Image (cartoon, rainbow, N blue to C red):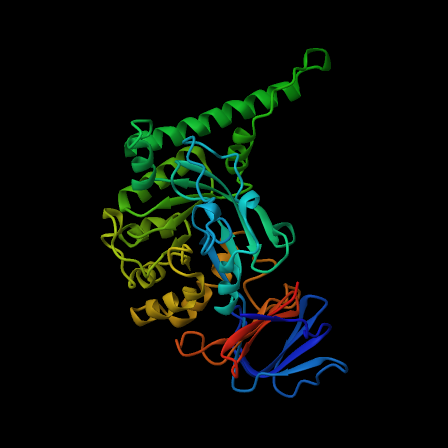
Length: 411
């Protein structure tokens, strides 16, 4: 894919398309006005375009907010880099709550450009699932010279894993945890340590100045404290129904906000998950059943969860499934029973809410960031293509039909 510097800035009016704001009814022949990096207006047919605006004709096309993958490893598991670009798991300790995905993301990872070609303009980057507690996630946009200028929210959660992965990693070393019960015990122990740490800090703060002592900082326990104070959610990797039940049990014990990641068998407990208002980030959906946990993987599961009242987001778990195939997973889930409106919400406003960024992204709403994609047609049609992408009101990508390739802006 090539680059160009011929990208216009300033006010943009995207006119004549089918505008799908996600939160609100579609507008046929609508206009989306982008100004100062924000969505300024969503108007119907006949709207007078502001003088001096860069007018983009979207007649016959669909206009949507940028898609969001709420669980991926873009930038920490780099495309075409092998071991040198592999920074997903810090496997040296079962509890690494202090590590941050932010510190390992390479903005030059080809995966970010792949994402944009598929209409994905934001991603929540997670550490991996080798450890019972893997580290802090970060929500970022998919375009920027440095990760710092891409950040939407940091941290956006704390990653944890139940099931086969930590059991395998540490079991092969004959270390704890080598069983499911060991993994749960490690997680509980870490939370107890965090509670004790918070108690020490509180006691030191209450003590008279003459008796006050300094509590030595512990970055690991500070991160866990943010979960216990419900400042960030607990991002629980779990596939099997029994592991999901364990995740819910521990969350109830310690009183934090739980997000279920993957949720392959979440449909088996859908009523309980819905009653507890726990969101499920389901996927990846294009994989083989490569391990026992995936025995019940099905493209029908997103529809089953949504029908039970569970808020779902769909994930590629990139690079497990290439991130630009996010919408194709949604399409095939629709084929297997997921409502099309819910499918689009599962790659826009639902993941935005889960990662705590719905005030900025996830829908075409005046005041939100002008992160907009123009599609050749219905994005749930596999023949449709993301033709233009705008980030903060600036065109960053355009598909060139003559060259049959995407053209990216310069930073």
